Amino acid sequence: MIGFVAFSLKRAWQGFWRNAVMSIAATATMVLMLLLLAGFWIVQTGLLAGLQFTEEKVEVVAYLHTNASPLQVDLLTQRIEALPEVESVTFVSRDEALDNFRDSLQAQGREDLTRYLDSNPLYASLEVKLTDPSFNRAVTAALEDEVLVRNVLRVEDLVDRLLTVTGILRTAGTGILIVVGLIVLFIIVNTIRLAVFARAEEIEIMRLVGASDAFIRWPFVFEGAFVGLLGSVLTLAILAAASDPLSTFMTGFFNVLPLQFGTLTRDLVLLVTAAGVGLGVVGSWLSVRTYLIR
Amino acid sequence: MTAAPPPVRSIRQRLISRPEPRRDQDRAVLVMHDVTMEYPNGNVALRDVDLVIPEGDFVFLVGPSGAGKSTLMRLIIRDEVATRGQVVLDGADLARLSRRNVPKIRRKIGTIFQDFKLLPRKNVWENVAFALEVTGTPRRKIRPAVDRVLALVGLTAQARQVPSQLSGGEQQRTAIARALVHDPRIIIADEPTGNLDPLISWEILQLLLRINELGVTVLMATHNAEVVTALRRRVVALEEGRIIRDEVGGAYHRED
Image 1: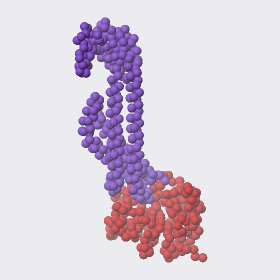
Image 2 (image 1 turned 60 degrees about the vertical axis):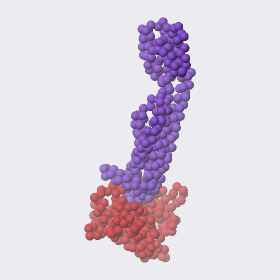
Image 3 (image 1 turned 45 degrees about the horizontal axis):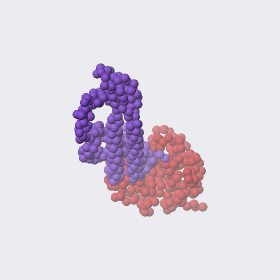
Image 4 (image 1 turned 180 degrees about the horizontal axis):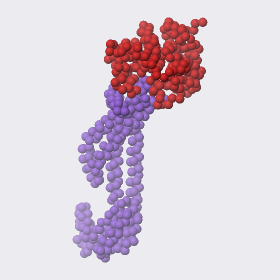
């Protein structure tokens, strides 16, 4: 068994270098395809983060009657927070609301009109964050039943439209990623098929002298895995070299997005390595099969 | 040369000292019974072929191109399975053989072709050793076995040369060494002298005869009328998929 593995590994290594041109062509194809796959995956991850960020912006705002006592507000906050659809509740008092209003006017560079007011005309409010934006109807209804609540800002239409758009984008993104993955699979399998075809005579000799299927197949499978591993290492090297200028641009552009580059890198390394080695193994397995089955 | 044990003796002794006693009908290395081979495209390559080759025989298979010689050989190495009839090699019915056992039966057959089928990047020694490596032979058994067959075919001095440095005759001798290294029950040679000039062809034939004298059965397909007629061995003639002649001591052409 150890002898068999050693034999297969040795033959795989020899096979790679003895057909250097084909092997390099296969590796180059592998690198290009993995770059394509990784590129689409990065875009998809960015898109998903963007969509999630947008969806988190959805909140239900309930304005409270001015006569609500702090104790009543506390109790109401606790009741609302206990709802399973609710992520968190933030109380904004009337003074805070006025401050926010002033800040936003200032930010827009407009004159502060609040100093002409006798008293604060704004209502205190509860800003309710949802675990999922699609729960907005239920939470709105629950809030409207409360006596303390004056009115609830209705956002159903807006939320529905947003959810439709994000749903389409998610499906489209996943669909494109799958299509790209399939294209990559076909191209790599075909490239490896060519590399195996170049050694058809060697396989024929092996069959004639009575080599078992395992002895014919595994060296090629190991060779495919080696091509895949080499391809993914090169791909990751290229991505690493490109990541500095790219991430500066990305963070500048997607400033607001909670993209975590740590987990992105880890997932990317896993994806590229698994795809490279997996495609190499599957490609070789399928290619050699053609010659084994009679 | 001196290091190798006398090869003549070792092969003969192995053949004599087979452990199980063999009954007479088992002595045939190859039995073909009523074999018909029809390809999926409707082309019938062999019709009702009956052929028995006893152990130690030397058989010439002759006939025009397309007569079915190659198909017959492909049936023996189980590259194809007969549409009808039985092909029994060394007691095993090839049609009933499971996929997993096909390689094992192929190790009992040594194959030689017109185009040698050597690996261009491996030298003579490695080409012969390859047949043992890919069948999982332990390393320590490979070296003596390869040295022995190279001595037998007279290529000890050329062991480190690659095929492109060899003459056609030497390349074919390398292929013969590779065919022998598994200690086969039968050697199947498809036009082994087809690419060689007459003198070298005789040399290859002498080698095959010598191997036959050591007890290995030989089945050789050929167009070389001069050789067949001169040697007066058993001749099996195929025409349009049928055996039209099977005579011991025959010539290439019918002599009536």
